[in-house]
Image (tube, rainbow, N blue to C red; front, side):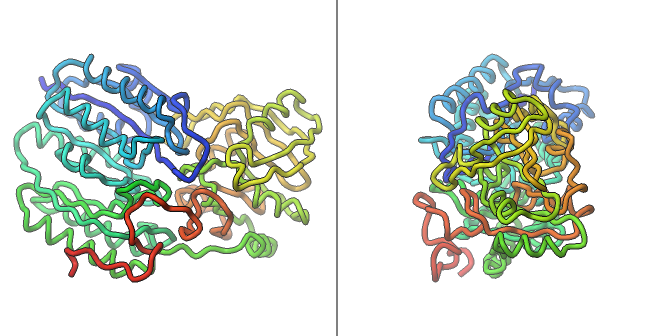
Length: 489
């Protein structure tokens, strides 16, 4: 029976966030506990397992799963330890016949700019020339090592990301085909010197969805194996940052190249449409005052989902002074404030310096006097069933504003971050989410309006506000007169 190695390493890095990601930031499951922890979740690993289990003649070899909330660059010592533990877990698994690897694709260390490529190099050095399929977030930053060391790379097809499980299924099916010797991958790749943002990336309604549907049409063809547009994470400022079209076919080089060129031309020709429209904080608040119900503020600039620090108080300040007349809900990462609230106890009144504890160069603390409404340990589960660890957590109330204060960064994308702490977004006129678009799946059904807010932060959709130093230039929209890729001329 074939032995299939299972491993996972996921984190999205924002290099403009000064707060480092530590080894301790990762939730790590080793060996069999990896399957126990994730097989009932809405994740790639669970989807892959479901496909593999349809074939009783396989032996899973779970090595290691390491998952962290998006954040700043991974500290060198922590990344080295993580890679060593992954390497050792793969080695201890013994000989295998194939590898199913779950990656994000936009990790970065303080020094190592391509952790996923390094992980692939190490794994290949142990398992040898066996079939290897890896999944990628569509925000992955594609490197030469990733393309060369994996037989097939299978990217997400949705934004907001709702296809984790089905992406795992797609990857597992391709791996089984490789194991059976039924396919010979041919890869075509076109690099696009463009960084993209904005609502046109919504795959259900935006232009980007048209590109993805071309990818899906390729996968539906007899010779189609995998296709995607990897738009990169524009906040991971590394040398390989750009958009990529990646097409894999079964032995059909001409089909791969023709499809890659068609999709790349579509993306390039529409590049000016992939720029985010933003609204000032003041105008956003004014619009919320007259809204027919809940207004969701997208604070993408401080999106923990994109790797920001989560300690922005820019919108909070504007809601407190002058006082907003309606109930508002604002999340923030501030360990000292959470600790002070826990020491004071529920029902007490505290005066704290709130915000700017993790990204002090961008945010100055604001003094807030508030009631401690409730206290929590910060442990809950996201909508997909995976674990969240916010650390000591407090709900503070200042005037009409409820402030959810966590000690650690967590994803503020779905509603579970709030409901797990006794807060229902439907009870508020304004709710601030720390996400550029992923929140829409959870809020569009209850929101009267959604406003992308132009606030400061390390993951601002206003890309011209960020200090890029490593990514390849020229690149749209950072530079004027960017030449088209050679494949399109």
